[in-house]
Image (cartoon, rainbow, N blue to C red):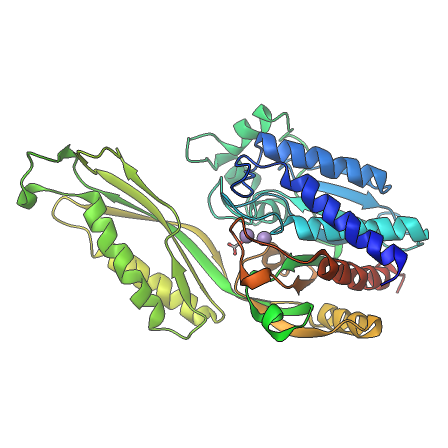
Amino acid sequence: MNGSEKSLQERIETHIAELERFTATPGRGTTRLTYSPQDLGARAYLKERMREYGLDVREDGFGNLFGKREGTIEGAPSVLIGSHFDSVPNGGAYDGPAGVIAGLEVARLFAENGTRHAYPLEVFALIEEEGARFPGGLMGSRAMLGVLSKEEFARQTDKDGVTTIEAMRAAGLDPSLPGRREQGSIKAYLELHIEQGPLLEDSGIPVGVVDAIVGLAQVQITVKGRAGHAGTTPMNRRSDALVAASRIVAQLPDAAEGEEESTVVTVGRLNVFPNGANVIPDRVVFTVDLRSGAEEHVRSVLAKTKELALAAAGDGIEVEIEDQLYIAPKRMDESVRALLREKSGALGIAHRPISSGAGHDAMIFADFTAAGMLFVPSRDGLSHCPEEWTDAAHIADAVRIFHEAARALTEAE
Ligand code: GLV
Ligand code: MN
Ligand code: MN
């Protein structure tokens, strides 16, 4: 490892440590909800680094952040590179930030080398990929590409009923800024992400070139019953929303296990109302997240989920189902994958193909532009938890590959 390589690794470690400070749960992982004080802190840090690396900083009307290095062709479409900077509750320091940092460090290498290029390079840091505050996830990319209209975006509320627009204004962000990004303004999309699974570590290979991302759907199910006294209401006179919801939840694993093995289903959020120890629950609201590498299985488990949820209705129980997200499995662009393989090979960095079981903004961009992703190993395959950790040396490998790929993609044809 030469001197400048070591300092790239150190810079990556510094960025991770600096961003990690912006958490609502110090000592219990990263909790950085969109438009929260922690978002604002991380945002300020990223803007500062963007300016330091010679980028023109801009926010859009959704709070997505961009840093642009102009090329020689005026008005030409940009090569985008980055990831998201929100987190799940009590998550890790790498899911999202690793990719934003990779974008920043590629831009720094362009600046350091005085690279001349025809097409602009644009580093991005997107909001709300995780869906931890607002429904559905992938919100920054869906909004900026018009998959979620400005009006639909404005209607989204968090669990406390606060709308996106109210939350942006409270954070001092400006929802009236331009938001929608024209398809013709993007030439290619690159995203580095931690693998979040064990395959790279187990195979001892530092870089995965992503071939495809699973299809995923999320629904929110509301089960309504009747509240009552826990001590005085006989069992045969109850319409207990939690008992009904539990029956639905308990059947979901079987619904997924009947499909091929990449098919998974998760109930990760469940709220019981009124949530009193001696009150029969009258309302339960929970999410179902289901995924598969093949769209037919996503559709099939989605249909089974709705069927068994609706079957729980009756005897004073009502069930409502709200579709919150549906995305078919997406393949990454073949020419970008070939470029990433070529540059990894030229740099002597071992790589392998890999599929993603996690959702990424790249799934949205793949419908609009040539999108490609690299994965780097996650220690013990852990992610979405405080223990999440990735070796900065592997992130540095990915930066070097992306630097070469971005140079090629920003060159005149
Ligand atoms: C994002 O991490 C997702 O896979 O939902
Ligand atoms: Mn995540
Ligand atoms: Mn992520």
